[in-house]
Length: 441
Image 1 (tube, rainbow, N blue to C red):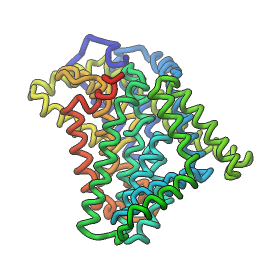
Image 2 (image 1 turned 135 degrees about the horizontal axis):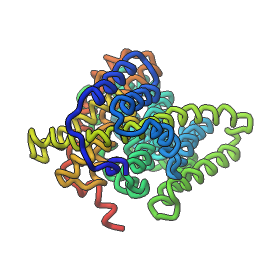
Image 3 (image 1 turned 180 degrees about the vertical axis):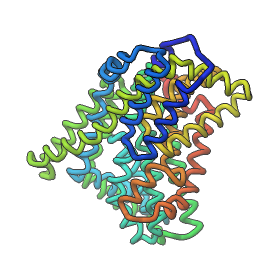
Image 4 (image 1 turned 120 degrees about the vertical axis):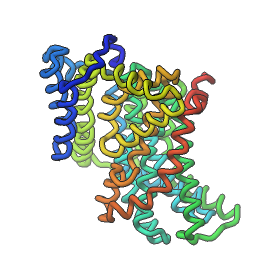
């Protein structure tokens, strides 16, 4: 585990630490790719401090990504891409719409549900925001929602991409901290559903306040008939999440095996339905490779940086500095959540995990926080950062998708941030939320 590799802290930090940090900030501000900015900072830290040999950089670049668990990442990305190309993702929307059609605000709630369904397969929030946004935003506007609010709703729902298992984020943090991804998937189910529920509640409250969607009520028989029709029309699409969840939660499949099985099943369904052709494969593979090509270089470059930080004693120094101000665990949890939300606003999940997990994990240990609880809290707080105004990543995704002003979307996202923050605090203060499913096995 990276955060345990070196135990002798060097608490006195100088330009060997602050110089590379400033360099990283400047490169990011100039628009340099994240992986390149991290690599330059790691190299600068190793050269200036001489705390570890520079040869570590080359070794870590390959050793860091030479893990079987990481093969699940491209498989889940590919599954999400195949779902969109075969039209199976629209079957999720049809069923979600049928489930919520009886109530006012039904299609808004359906949008949130389909975000959760899509997230349970793709494991990516940005992919979910783009895919679901294309399907729902125009229909949300037609249903009576203001376009900025419709964008904020999709951005919030897409946050479940890293929160509801299976999730690429849990694979990465499991790699960094030496925890089984399957264990984290099980632990994340209840917290992920709570976040999904908080987004649903927020939309219901806002809809009742402003009466955006005026859909009327229907009788139980009408609702049941409509739901039955939707399920009959698209039941086969749920084979994919069913395989993933059953395989992982029963222990019969590893996340990698579940991802591979999901890809095969999705492709078979696409061929049977006639929505997937052999000619689609090159574009599909290139699209998924581009997404995967963003994630893995970040992991590769972040690992030597994390090792350099550990060698300089940054995690231990951070714990000492923070606990010298206060030892109150409740305040320290709020501090960690605040740091993670701020980090989630300005940077993608993967570099945040690889850089911050080794720094914050010792602080969580200091206050007696369960390591599983810490991982769930960290990923959830980063997810909140994705829609925290004005820099949340998902806000930019839906803004680019629709051309809507980022500031208008950000204002509408505030209620979602508030309710999601409440759930995040619950996760931080109540270990049972993250460990209940583990204790039942």
